[in-house]
Length: 236
Image (cartoon, rainbow, N blue to C red; front, top):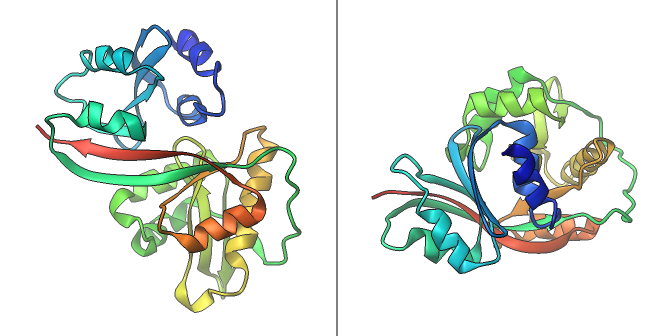
């Protein structure tokens, strides 16, 4: 089944980069294919349900294969949300725009003292992240050990950091307030782009629509907005 899912996702590799990279990091638990649409179930920090579809009727058919334990949804495109959540209570939702970096964009030189994150940095990252409510120490530690993560340390303390999500998206960029306006955010993003490209992966990221500072940073580097995606949990 995993090869069938990969073949379907590869028909539109840029659009499906989330699901494809997720399945390179975590095992497939279950999948259902109907026509050119697929529902994927896999676990990172939570048991997630994902979809790749261009057809509402096929999506509706896939939803009949959900069970009562399927509560958490990832990388859900805008048009899919009312179909999936119809008659359901949404307990929480995180909505972002997805950006990707074309292959022909060259990166500037890095001037900051960038180094790698290590597993012991995870508790500090969670405690100081703007997205701490969506993260766990175990999840961040896993991401740091499984994939690239970069930081700047001042006097041996984390001043800024960045790492990947479970689908290899570049994310969780954070600069401590006392160290802002020093170029750390730009340099860390460039470093992560270089590391991701070295793995022959398309660099991509998620940014909340109201986060103008981060949008300005990635568009300055040449990222293109691709689509809007959400993560959410449903109740009964």
